[in-house]
Image (cartoon, rainbow, N blue to C red; front, side, top):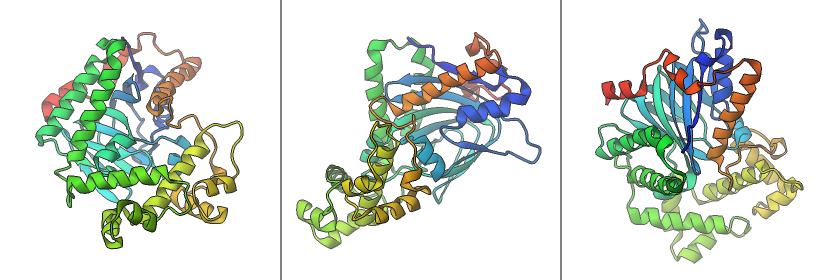
Length: 365
């Protein structure tokens, strides 16, 4: 059994609330000014870990969020964040894709890609889920900015499951956590992979073949010969056929380059007693030279490879989502040193002046 972690801006003095909420939110996004009156930020979060997942309920007043490439590099998080819209609407720009989500909808954004969001006062049930199962279910296509409409029956099923999961986390025994983690990942992946609301959906056979190509690319990521010719030979298809598989993803070469760059970022973020030189890393990942690698890396992440510092947020075998929980725990310790937080923190949830998620869900769904 686990009680989870609870933090609320009502736990600190009024003049500290905006700073408190910004620090809690910082690994995922930066909070921008709401309006000229500089209204205090308010919010509360109650989070649980479920293996490599983290599920939480969040309530807040009107807030603006930004996650740019510099934040992506410094946080190192490589998960999708799925949000059940239990109250309040939002408008977002997900790396050029305009998104609107309303109460009852579920939407996803990729923590490895930029986004900017304006959110009304409201509430969410959020789930941090590893990237690979979602991308695999979508045939390698990004789910960044995907909105599952509330009226869709499968959206409703997933919404109810996640709301109920959060409500019952404190009653799930340790022997059941692994099974619940697996079931949750499979359910989320299968429903997001269905995508009947996505224009231009290709056949499932195309998705399966493209997923196999991604596995092949990752297995040969350091081979300097990795490219269209190698893929054509291995999968026995024509150049035109191969290019059609990757057209919507920017092309074969762009996909290979970006996966190499993403692998480089993960390596650079991983704490290591003996870090490779930039040249060594470039050659290991199949780049012709360090200059080509550095220019491509800087274009993708807005920071040079030498500017990346090892960080604590890298999602590795320890569980990237679990480290968000560690961040919340560290915030409790930090702020307890500055101002005594209440020992009965969970009881403070009712103090925040935003609607209760269950009430909002009943009103809007």
